[in-house]
Length: 346
Image 1 (tube, rainbow, N blue to C red):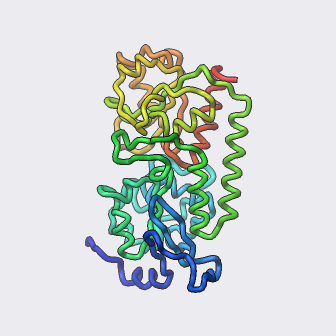
Image 2: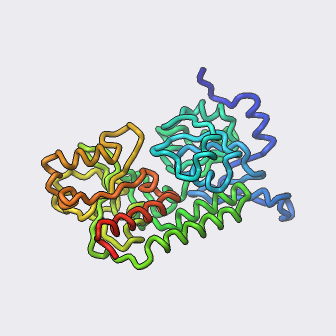
Image 3: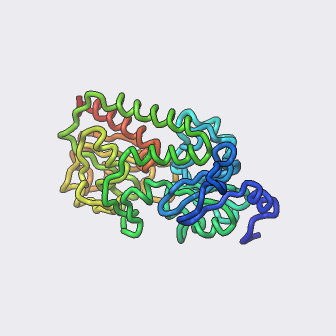
């Protein structure tokens, strides 16, 4: 039965942990300036909000795959009470940890389903997940004493989510923004050293993948989903970060929209050298899997004569690698390797 309040057990749990999300001016110290035991309370500045915790989260709910994989990578599976909204299988190496965490829904769960998990902290990769039309607004969670953290890659990295095409960016996303989210979450849970270790490993992977790579003459087009009105990457989201890392060019670098819908005739005019395909397992759009995308490209009159299609120049990425997340590093590795395999880069 739908409910608008937490169950009694959750109401007892939240005061015990005393987790609150504060507006500007909220303090993170005890009177006199002495910090509490274990370094709490502590505050994370997040997208215009100050999220204050007086104890490490013990029953967090992650509402998007991107934040879930960060938390799992930080060794926090035992502190996750639920996850939701998946586009792909979990990242390799995290299968066992992920299996121990309840999946509340493959897509957006209901607000009541989240509350049933008795969360003391909620994370999301996208503002829309905790905005109007999403699971519930940040304010609705906070009225019940549940602080909310949203990835700064979506709301504080020059991103305007009111624009079309899944938002628009005034400046390009940088890997530093992804690393900032990892550090924020590590600090919230009191595992800062794990966060620094994870960032260092990711930075080393980028260095190894791009060492000696020369792809300056190669144009890339990124297709996430939808055959009739395809979502193609603009200049400045995760695909832009991948493209800059490998030293190539984005075929649609002239648009700041995150995922504009662009017609195939325009694609034919740009005629990209390589098409990077989102290989999704969800079923909410047309042409989700890479195989379905390739079938369409080879069969449609507007696309079958594209250079990339005729030359079979495809590189496959997970949906998560195309979103701002730690798997954007995986995207850099796979695009770099694909360009080398196609003989298009040193």
